[in-house]
Length: 444
Image (cartoon, rainbow, N blue to C red; front, side, top):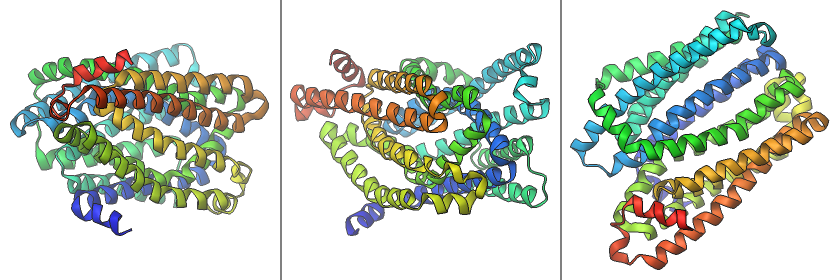
């Protein structure tokens, strides 16, 4: 414990980062409870399915905006980084415009073919979902900007505004029997946009569209690879959930998400790492080479394991009373799914550590192939088992896909590490460019 506390003292930004993730994960946890209890399994399942669509469109932002930015910006000089971030913000606004156009076309198709009738959604729900998507993207851009600039206290401020107001308004609607799927998405949209507006007014980072073209050109190869990887990962997780809903219905989907939400506070660790580790890993690799990168990621993995394992054991042992207490008796039948989710989270933690390594050395080809393996495994298992084993089959498919992706990614990372250690001298190790690393990975 002294070693762990020493890490936090040496890196004070970690305190703000953990506090920020506590706000985000805690609010999402409470939001899930409020929606699940009030809406009931079936309507909550509908909310989950719509949220999966939102997450799909967010994958474009994560791949084309965040992943290249989190790795490239920390290695730039201050002036160069400022120009780069102006361009990234312009690229974010361009992405929002493209998504608006794409969603508009999809909405027209939904109404032309009467899909809204079959799905049980109306124009208010559709409009609220679109507003939540766009507002959340703007807010998430603002907080990622703060993490790149190593201003986690500012990220904590806007997240407190966003998620604090979100939980408060959902609670008010819950107490007044006014909470429904559309209201939930409108609240998410309003709270997210308010937080973005506060951050934008605070820093006044203006978009420079001339720089956006340069940013896109420089980061296109990496962003493209991440985008393909994200498509596979979404298909193997949220996609499996959506496709399975056609066989099992919306109510079991609500039960699955309720079980997943119980493990939700673990995201404090995951999201904190996502905001800090890529930045610090890129710096370590730039300064100390492969040895420094491996040492840093090893310490992070040990730190995360020490926090994660005891919590997962408690959740697995007391799953039944916890789910009854939080969600009520209507969700009691889904308590056994918590064990599956605990196992998935355990494997996902180590998969993330491997991905941090692969992202830092720009071995994005491995990430794509790992995502493909995860998706194919999950989809095939769900396809052949969901009609017989229902929600249990979905959870087993998700766990199997994660395991398959981890095995492949870890094996590939070992090969890349051995090549780097064998072929690079200590002097050249710290100056190797990412293009040559990518070439070595492809040959492995």
